[in-house]
Image 1 (cartoon, rainbow, N blue to C red):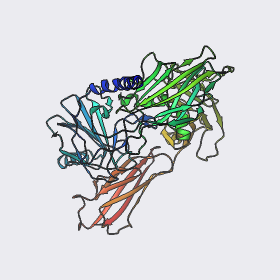
Image 2 (image 1 turned 45 degrees about the vertical axis):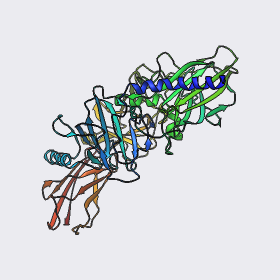
Image 3 (image 1 turned 135 degrees about the vertical axis):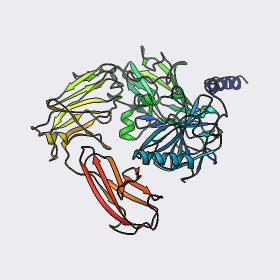
Image 4 (image 1 turned 45 degrees about the horizontal axis):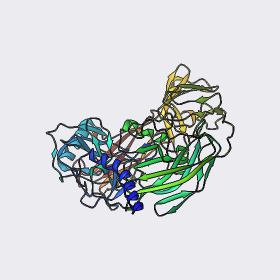
Amino acid sequence: MKIFYYLMLFVCLINTGIVEAQNNYPQNYFRNPLNIPMQLAANFGAVRTNHFHMGLDLRTNSQENLPVLAAADGYVSRIKVERYGFGNALYITHPNGYTTVYAHLNKYFNQLDEYVKEKQYKDEKWEQDITFQPGQFPVQKGQQIALSGNTGGSAGPHLHFEIRDTKTEECLNPLLFGFAIPDNIAPIISGLYWYDRRFSTYEPGANGIAVKKAGNVYTSNLVQVNSQEISFAIKAVDKANQGFNLGIYNAELLMDGKLIYNFEIDKIHYDDTRYINGCIDYTKFIRDKMGIQHLADLPGMKLQNYSTPNLTGIIRLQDENIHTIEIVLKDVKGNTSRLTTKLQLNKTSDKISSAAKTIMPNEAKTITTENAEINFSKNAVYDALNFNAFEKPDADPDAVSNTIVLHSPYIPVQDEYTLKIKPNRKLSNAEKDKAVIVLDYGSDNDVVKVRWNADRAEAKFNRLGKAKLLIDNSLPSVSPGWAEGAMVTNSSLVLKGSTTIGDIVSFRAELDSKWLRFARVKNNFVYLFDEKCPKGSGSHTLKVTTVNTAGNTNTQTFTFRR
């Protein structure tokens, strides 16, 4: 009976914080924004590239055009139409101080859709960010407001749903609002890692420890370390009842029964979401596709409302005794997993030496090579970094500089740094006007048109990698999905965009000399036939003007019949 009593007491204690969090928000005020049961493809706080996931991804059974419903009474306060990000998004402001967001939509409800379309034609601009007054588009709870879709930065049909504090615009964890989503599966732990914290988590990096599972209890062999100052990290996911890998809501780290660190993901502002790179092992995430979350603070991580102040998670071992480590993971429903292990200082190794080009958190730093200068702000890095910068020749015939190697793409930076590159020959004014810096970070590249500061080309970036200065005289172009002069019988015109370097930054289409609304879908441009070009309207001329990153302009003309 005593064992049962203490077990129940433990369960009550771990759930107290969750209940308190839920009591901060109205329960059952918001309804499911779909007419099908809520099933999660992603939850609030899940790890993403350079950001936390800021809402719920609700499954739509791999279908598009399901009715999307207002979660509560309110008014449409904003819509956004954009190529990436949310795609087509709708915001509803509610009288209780919250705003709900619905993203990746295919279409707004008819009255709103017409309003947006008219503004697009008036502005001659497809991308929009429109705010509304309370009386313009009021909605009631359960009213259809849109059709679900796959627009913007979406990898498959679903509805992205957020709840925000209207005043602060902080995103709040929707699972704290009482939605009926079944979940009786505890988080799943698949790895334990420790880091030597005498210099940095980046050097020498993660030390992996295998874990074993028995029920919801995990163990590992004795963790022997060679540093008196360490921290831990955990590889884990929450599965709920639906099979997708979800993010961990709450984690606690205890040493010899004393809490030394915890994090809980209740609310995050979009201004702060990039701080995820200071909460995870970024190297493992980018290089090895592994989501490992630190159970300790990094000195440059400034995310508010994430971890408990004064609990740093840094373990300073003063002896060679064996210590007990316990890690407790919980989801919003209170399902709990525990990992217990033993920790011992074995033999202290020599401290890792720092180099002359070390960048420290909370300190600005300028680093130079022979022909380049890199200016980092005090907020640039999350942890100490022996920054390695050097130059090497580049074989690209369009390159007018060496390649500047900026350490490694597997190390994150928080905010933008300024890169200045001196060309390796004198450039004409025309060449300077077409100059771009290309930053290759492995999986992709960023291309930025430079501005000139005396004899140096200057641009800003927020990733590390290999950079070079190029002169881009190439033209952007689009390719039609129909034969020249052909009869088009399907429901849309599709133009495939193409560039040699950079992106198409400007697109304008005119049908018989009048602006025509094309939507940007990744690298394609799509016009859905409407009253601007009805069936039986005969032969048409479509003039398309595109501009690339360097500012090169191309005008193409196509004909078709309708």
